[in-house]
Image 1 (cartoon, rainbow, N blue to C red):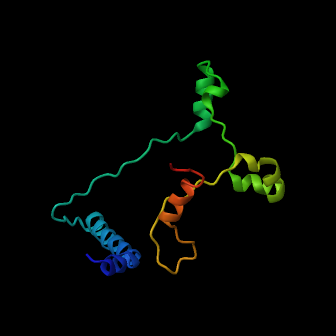
Image 2: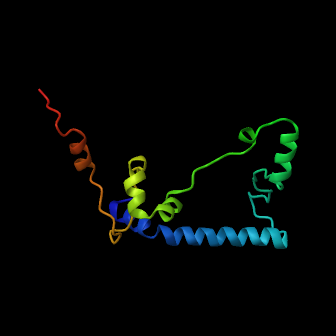
Length: 135
């Protein structure tokens, strides 16, 4: 593929993804509803995670077995948005801002019309070595 072909494919990626999803949805629906068997494919039960249906009952039983609250329950701090609503954005930034970081996002290719600033590998490399003197 040449550069134009790759750009064309990537600019149409969402269309391809939507089309593939539609084909997959159709194949799954006909397999489930009509018993359709697709060559090279089979219908299986998907993966799932175990779930506790009655956490309070489980907790009571564990307490009866002499386990402590700390051993039974997880405590987790609320998310940034909830804390900003609690304190207000300015107070949140002033009081808690030093403990909040926004990691750099993973590089991704997007259409030129995207509003984000373009990454420059050369500029990033130059910034990494800024102040380093080579003898």
